[in-house]
Amino acid sequence: MTNVFGKIDDKLHQVTSPERYIGREWNQIKKTWDRGKIKTCLAFPDTYEIGMSHLGLKILYHLLNEEDDIICERVFAPWSDMEDLLLEEEVKLFSLENKRELKEFDIVGFTLQFELSYTTILNMLDLGGIPVYARERDGNHPLIIAGGATVFNPEPIAPFIDLFYLGEGEKNLVTIVSSYQELKDKGLSRQEILKEMSELPGVYVPSLYKPQYLNEKFKGVEIEPGVKEKVKRQYVKDLDEAYYPTEFIVPYADIVHNRAVIEISRGCQRGCRFCAAGMTYRPVRERSLEKILTLTEKIIDSTGYDEISLTSLSSMDYSKIEELVTRLVDKFSDKNVSISLPSLRIDEFSLEIASKVQQVRRSGLTFAPEAGTQRLRNIINKGVEEEDLYQAVRSAFKSGWHRIKLYFMIGLPEEKEEDLAGIVEMAQKTAAIGREIRQETDKRMRPIEVQVNVSTFVPKPFTPFQWYRMDTVSEIKDKIKYLQQNLTGRSLALDWNDPETSRLEGMLARGDRRLAAVIHQVWQQGGKLEGWSEELDYKRWQKALTDQDLTAADFFVPEEVTAPLPWDHLYPGVEKKFLQREWSLAKAAEKTPDCRWSICSDCGACDSPQADLVLAAGRDEDVNESKIQ
Image 1: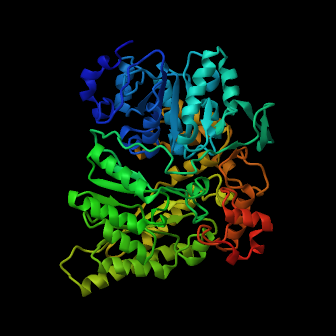
Image 2: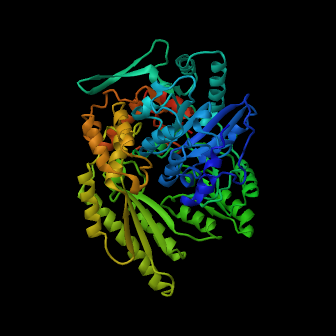
Image 3: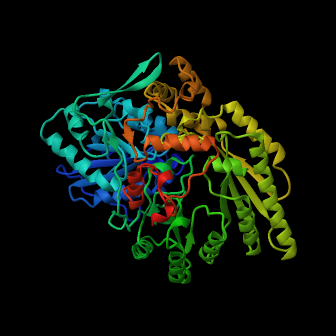
């Protein structure tokens, strides 16, 4: 092999953060490059510090390397200075472990975490010596697969990917990798291999599904004979039985989330209508208390981390969260190991838990009311009362916290100016409560800080809001301007995300294959790493859309809820009829109860006794709630 790293290692001092490219971290797995092994490379379309913070990549890396006949390595997107060095020295993008060029691998698997990473995928393929369009590859090229959070509408990048996997990788990824090698050894052509692999659970081969249009309107897909009509998401039913590594790689560089991560549950039952993850990761599954404690101890021992992050979509809903936190604090506090949780529920119980986890290291608290009025919170199905927030922050300030973050969204369906005014009022009242309590307690303590973070709502596939048109950039800017002008006063700070970035994210989230040519053109014009604000050029996207005779608005036109959608042939578990019903309830500002503690909402995601009873009764309105345990 060519020693590609040897051509640039003495020049890495010329690039920022050279540690992104050297590998050799603690707990890295470097196997002998054996001809008889299946060579896979996990590719994350962002920089090292972002990719190495991604739990899914860590799990899959160790899962595949557990197999004796599989080599699994990593590659991340290079920053522009490193890309320039690669091109100057005529070196292809290479993996961290064995420093092998991407084109040498059998399989390259991309993580789909953010829509604005799509141009980076093309850039990494090109830098790795691999044709960007799937139709241009032959048996000498790696199989390009992709999966992750945005895989439930992969249509905009379908022409660039050989196959997608829908669901949780622990379920079938090893089978997919092994099957590819077995079919390849039989001498089948690339297309024959893909046709055979399309029969595997969770596998979607886009070349076997042809989108149909009538007068530029999507009308459905034409599916090759013998190919399944719907691709179903695969998921692990028992988290205690699911693979979970304990010898995580410890980076030399500082990464975004440089700590021990313990996934305590998957899925969320709260039913927030804006949340794609809350819909597509159903049903709720929990790891047992003892399993979590065992994993935590092993991870701390193998990594030396001094912080434990308890992660899930809704960590405070873990059924034994109080006991778990108590036992972790008792076990690790004397070792100066802290515990962290994501944003808290707005209630007294959350505050009690926060007080326990921050005994070692106290930081700020984060609450997410999401909307400024109860009417709008009912529309989005966010079960939060305004007084709950005030009671929680009052207790927090009394307990000694001085910094609180409040998360809101703007651009939600049915939003009015009164909802923006509600954001202002809630933030100002929160700050006023803090100042009042500080006056009563100890004026010498640090001043009160209330940070208001505002994000633009992006309608996502497989949510009840997938039929919402989304605000234009101009509308979003007007709302931000309103908040800037009105959200003033002592102790307050406002932060918001870029409206143009949000609009592009929404377009790509709801797009179809017509956007592939747009993505390709943007990449050819220099688009890459567009999750970084300094790299995103909105005008570049506007020009590409114009050149392809498209507009962003084409992908936000309100349709009848019965109209076909570009992602209808993919199935994450929630039924379209459930999403249609939730959209109707949203417009009526009616809430749907939390199905874990109340009546089943018949979403289709699980086979629980509640769901069976609902189906037997015909509709949940006819079921006596007292009969459901």
